Amino acid sequence: MIKQDVHSLALLAWLIASGDEGEPVATGADRGRAPLSLRERNKLRTRRSLLDAALEIFTEQGFGSASVEAIAARAGASKVTVYSYFPSGREELFRQLYDEINTELLDRALALWGASEGLVDRVTALARALLEIGARPLVGRFYSIDDPALEAALDPVRGHASGTFRQLISAELGRCRDAGELSSTADPDALARLLVGASRAALTEVARRPERAGELLEAFADLVRGLLGDADDAGADAPGAY
Image (tube, rainbow, N blue to C red):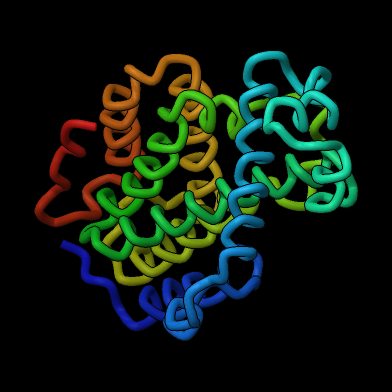
Protein backbone atom coordinates (compact mmCIF):
# COMPACT_ATOMS: atom_id res chain seq x y z
CA MET A 1 0.00 0.00 0.00
CA ILE A 2 1.35 3.41 -0.92
CA LYS A 3 1.61 5.85 1.97
CA GLN A 4 1.34 9.60 1.46
CA ASP A 5 4.76 11.21 1.78
CA VAL A 6 5.68 14.76 2.64
CA HIS A 7 5.30 15.95 -0.96
CA SER A 8 1.78 14.54 -1.34
CA LEU A 9 0.67 16.03 1.95
CA ALA A 10 2.20 19.37 1.08
CA LEU A 11 0.37 19.47 -2.26
CA LEU A 12 -2.91 18.50 -0.64
CA ALA A 13 -2.47 21.13 2.08
CA TRP A 14 -1.74 23.81 -0.52
CA LEU A 15 -4.82 22.91 -2.55
CA ILE A 16 -7.05 22.90 0.51
CA ALA A 17 -5.67 26.23 1.69
CA SER A 18 -5.81 27.95 -1.66
CA GLY A 19 -9.01 26.60 -3.18
CA ASP A 20 -8.87 25.82 -6.89
CA GLU A 21 -6.96 28.66 -8.47
CA GLY A 22 -5.36 30.24 -5.43
CA GLU A 23 -8.55 31.78 -4.05
CA PRO A 24 -8.88 31.60 -0.26
CA VAL A 25 -11.46 29.26 1.20
CA ALA A 26 -13.24 29.34 4.52
CA THR A 27 -10.99 28.84 7.53
CA GLY A 28 -11.58 28.14 11.19
CA ALA A 29 -11.50 31.88 11.83
CA ASP A 30 -14.25 32.40 9.27
CA ARG A 31 -16.40 29.77 10.92
CA GLY A 32 -15.89 31.45 14.30
CA ARG A 33 -17.44 34.76 13.27
CA ALA A 34 -20.48 36.22 14.99
CA PRO A 35 -23.88 34.91 13.84
CA LEU A 36 -25.40 36.62 10.83
CA SER A 37 -27.97 39.33 11.36
CA LEU A 38 -31.55 38.92 10.16
CA ARG A 39 -30.82 41.24 7.22
CA GLU A 40 -27.78 39.20 6.23
CA ARG A 41 -29.73 35.95 6.47
CA ASN A 42 -32.49 37.40 4.29
CA LYS A 43 -29.95 38.49 1.69
CA LEU A 44 -28.48 34.99 1.60
CA ARG A 45 -31.94 33.47 1.20
CA THR A 46 -32.76 35.83 -1.66
CA ARG A 47 -29.49 35.05 -3.40
CA ARG A 48 -30.11 31.33 -2.94
CA SER A 49 -33.62 31.58 -4.35
CA LEU A 50 -32.32 33.37 -7.46
CA LEU A 51 -29.63 30.75 -8.03
CA ASP A 52 -32.12 27.92 -7.54
CA ALA A 53 -34.59 29.55 -9.92
CA ALA A 54 -31.91 29.94 -12.58
CA LEU A 55 -30.90 26.30 -12.20
CA GLU A 56 -34.49 25.10 -12.52
CA ILE A 57 -35.25 27.14 -15.62
CA PHE A 58 -31.95 26.20 -17.26
CA THR A 59 -32.50 22.47 -16.82
CA GLU A 60 -36.15 22.71 -17.90
CA GLN A 61 -35.86 25.04 -20.88
CA GLY A 62 -32.20 25.74 -21.63
CA PHE A 63 -30.04 28.83 -21.39
CA GLY A 64 -31.96 30.69 -24.08
CA SER A 65 -35.12 30.70 -21.98
CA ALA A 66 -33.36 31.57 -18.74
CA SER A 67 -33.91 35.31 -19.03
CA VAL A 68 -33.59 37.69 -16.12
CA GLU A 69 -37.37 38.18 -16.26
CA ALA A 70 -38.03 34.43 -16.08
CA ILE A 71 -35.56 33.94 -13.24
CA ALA A 72 -37.05 36.82 -11.26
CA ALA A 73 -40.58 35.50 -11.76
CA ARG A 74 -39.63 31.97 -10.69
CA ALA A 75 -37.92 33.30 -7.56
CA GLY A 76 -40.79 35.65 -6.73
CA ALA A 77 -38.51 38.66 -7.07
CA SER A 78 -38.13 41.66 -9.37
CA LYS A 79 -35.63 42.29 -12.16
CA VAL A 80 -34.16 45.03 -10.00
CA THR A 81 -33.48 42.45 -7.29
CA VAL A 82 -31.72 40.15 -9.75
CA TYR A 83 -29.43 42.94 -10.94
CA SER A 84 -28.74 44.11 -7.39
CA TYR A 85 -27.32 40.67 -6.58
CA PHE A 86 -25.86 39.94 -10.02
CA PRO A 87 -25.03 43.29 -11.69
CA SER A 88 -23.93 41.70 -14.97
CA GLY A 89 -27.19 39.81 -15.30
CA ARG A 90 -27.79 36.17 -16.04
CA GLU A 91 -24.21 35.48 -17.21
CA GLU A 92 -22.88 36.45 -13.80
CA LEU A 93 -25.63 34.47 -12.11
CA PHE A 94 -24.81 31.27 -13.99
CA ARG A 95 -21.09 31.84 -13.50
CA GLN A 96 -21.55 32.09 -9.75
CA LEU A 97 -23.79 29.03 -9.77
CA TYR A 98 -21.15 27.01 -11.62
CA ASP A 99 -18.40 28.27 -9.33
CA GLU A 100 -20.47 27.31 -6.29
CA ILE A 101 -20.74 23.74 -7.57
CA ASN A 102 -17.00 23.77 -8.28
CA THR A 103 -16.27 24.70 -4.67
CA GLU A 104 -18.57 22.00 -3.30
CA LEU A 105 -17.02 19.42 -5.61
CA LEU A 106 -13.46 20.32 -4.65
CA ASP A 107 -14.22 20.26 -0.93
CA ARG A 108 -15.71 16.77 -1.26
CA ALA A 109 -13.00 15.49 -3.60
CA LEU A 110 -10.14 16.69 -1.41
CA ALA A 111 -11.76 15.18 1.68
CA LEU A 112 -12.12 11.80 -0.06
CA TRP A 113 -8.58 11.99 -1.45
CA GLY A 114 -7.13 12.71 1.99
CA ALA A 115 -9.07 9.83 3.56
CA SER A 116 -7.97 7.29 0.92
CA GLU A 117 -4.89 5.08 1.00
CA GLY A 118 -3.30 3.72 -2.13
CA LEU A 119 -3.03 5.18 -5.59
CA VAL A 120 -6.06 3.47 -7.12
CA ASP A 121 -8.32 4.41 -4.21
CA ARG A 122 -7.18 8.03 -4.25
CA VAL A 123 -7.69 8.48 -7.99
CA THR A 124 -11.06 6.72 -7.81
CA ALA A 125 -12.07 8.98 -4.92
CA LEU A 126 -11.90 12.00 -7.22
CA ALA A 127 -14.22 10.31 -9.70
CA ARG A 128 -16.57 9.37 -6.87
CA ALA A 129 -16.90 13.03 -5.84
CA LEU A 130 -17.57 14.04 -9.45
CA LEU A 131 -20.22 11.37 -9.98
CA GLU A 132 -21.93 12.34 -6.73
CA ILE A 133 -22.42 15.78 -8.27
CA GLY A 134 -23.58 14.23 -11.54
CA ALA A 135 -26.19 12.07 -9.82
CA ARG A 136 -28.03 15.10 -8.45
CA PRO A 137 -30.77 15.73 -11.04
CA LEU A 138 -30.60 19.49 -11.58
CA VAL A 139 -27.00 20.08 -10.54
CA GLY A 140 -25.62 17.21 -12.60
CA ARG A 141 -27.34 18.32 -15.79
CA PHE A 142 -26.13 21.89 -15.39
CA TYR A 143 -22.56 21.03 -14.39
CA SER A 144 -22.11 18.59 -17.27
CA ILE A 145 -23.68 20.80 -19.93
CA ASP A 146 -21.78 21.62 -23.11
CA ASP A 147 -23.65 24.63 -24.46
CA PRO A 148 -21.82 27.08 -26.75
CA ALA A 149 -24.14 29.84 -25.57
CA LEU A 150 -22.73 29.43 -22.06
CA GLU A 151 -19.05 29.21 -22.97
CA ALA A 152 -18.27 32.91 -22.62
CA ALA A 153 -20.12 33.21 -19.32
CA LEU A 154 -18.52 30.15 -17.74
CA ASP A 155 -15.03 30.48 -19.21
CA PRO A 156 -13.55 32.18 -16.10
CA VAL A 157 -14.62 29.33 -13.82
CA ARG A 158 -14.74 26.26 -16.06
CA GLY A 159 -11.98 23.70 -15.83
CA HIS A 160 -10.88 24.62 -12.31
CA ALA A 161 -11.89 21.31 -10.75
CA SER A 162 -10.49 19.29 -13.65
CA GLY A 163 -7.23 21.21 -13.38
CA THR A 164 -6.97 20.48 -9.68
CA PHE A 165 -7.70 16.79 -10.28
CA ARG A 166 -4.95 16.68 -12.93
CA GLN A 167 -2.47 18.31 -10.56
CA LEU A 168 -3.22 15.84 -7.79
CA ILE A 169 -3.10 12.76 -10.01
CA SER A 170 -0.02 13.85 -11.96
CA ALA A 171 1.94 14.68 -8.81
CA GLU A 172 1.01 11.38 -7.18
CA LEU A 173 1.87 9.40 -10.31
CA GLY A 174 5.22 11.17 -10.55
CA ARG A 175 5.98 10.36 -6.94
CA CYS A 176 5.03 6.70 -7.41
CA ARG A 177 7.10 6.45 -10.58
CA ASP A 178 10.16 7.97 -8.90
CA ALA A 179 9.75 5.49 -6.04
CA GLY A 180 9.59 2.57 -8.46
CA GLU A 181 6.01 1.79 -7.45
CA LEU A 182 4.42 2.42 -10.86
CA SER A 183 4.71 -0.04 -13.71
CA SER A 184 3.49 2.36 -16.41
CA THR A 185 6.18 4.33 -18.22
CA ALA A 186 3.73 6.85 -19.70
CA ASP A 187 4.04 10.53 -18.85
CA PRO A 188 2.22 11.22 -15.53
CA ASP A 189 0.54 14.34 -16.88
CA ALA A 190 -0.71 12.48 -19.96
CA LEU A 191 -2.12 9.72 -17.75
CA ALA A 192 -3.73 12.29 -15.46
CA ARG A 193 -5.41 14.01 -18.41
CA LEU A 194 -6.69 10.67 -19.69
CA LEU A 195 -8.15 9.74 -16.32
CA VAL A 196 -9.77 13.12 -15.76
CA GLY A 197 -11.24 12.97 -19.26
CA ALA A 198 -12.70 9.54 -18.52
CA SER A 199 -14.25 10.80 -15.30
CA ARG A 200 -15.81 13.77 -17.11
CA ALA A 201 -17.28 11.42 -19.73
CA ALA A 202 -18.77 9.36 -16.91
CA LEU A 203 -20.20 12.55 -15.39
CA THR A 204 -22.07 13.32 -18.61
CA GLU A 205 -23.64 9.86 -18.64
CA VAL A 206 -24.54 9.94 -14.94
CA ALA A 207 -26.18 13.35 -15.36
CA ARG A 208 -28.54 11.71 -17.88
CA ARG A 209 -28.89 8.40 -16.05
CA PRO A 210 -28.09 8.75 -12.33
CA GLU A 211 -28.77 5.06 -11.72
CA ARG A 212 -25.54 4.22 -13.60
CA ALA A 213 -23.31 6.02 -11.08
CA GLY A 214 -22.23 2.89 -9.21
CA GLU A 215 -21.62 0.89 -12.37
CA LEU A 216 -19.50 3.63 -13.94
CA LEU A 217 -17.51 4.18 -10.75
CA GLU A 218 -16.64 0.47 -10.72
CA ALA A 219 -15.62 0.68 -14.38
CA PHE A 220 -13.48 3.74 -13.67
CA ALA A 221 -11.68 1.92 -10.86
CA ASP A 222 -10.97 -0.97 -13.25
CA LEU A 223 -9.63 1.51 -15.79
CA VAL A 224 -7.30 3.01 -13.20
CA ARG A 225 -5.98 -0.42 -12.24
CA GLY A 226 -5.45 -1.33 -15.88
CA LEU A 227 -3.57 1.87 -16.69
CA LEU A 228 -1.47 2.08 -13.57
CA GLY A 229 -0.63 -1.56 -13.06
CA ASP A 230 0.08 -2.93 -9.61
CA ALA A 231 0.97 0.34 -7.91
CA ASP A 232 -0.90 -0.71 -4.78
CA ASP A 233 0.86 -3.65 -3.14
CA ALA A 234 -2.29 -4.92 -1.53
CA GLY A 235 -4.60 -3.90 -4.37
CA ALA A 236 -7.50 -1.55 -4.01
CA ASP A 237 -10.79 -2.40 -2.46
CA ALA A 238 -13.79 -2.18 -4.76
CA PRO A 239 -15.42 1.24 -4.56
CA GLY A 240 -18.51 -0.31 -3.05
CA ALA A 241 -22.12 0.66 -3.43
CA TYR A 242 -22.59 4.17 -4.66
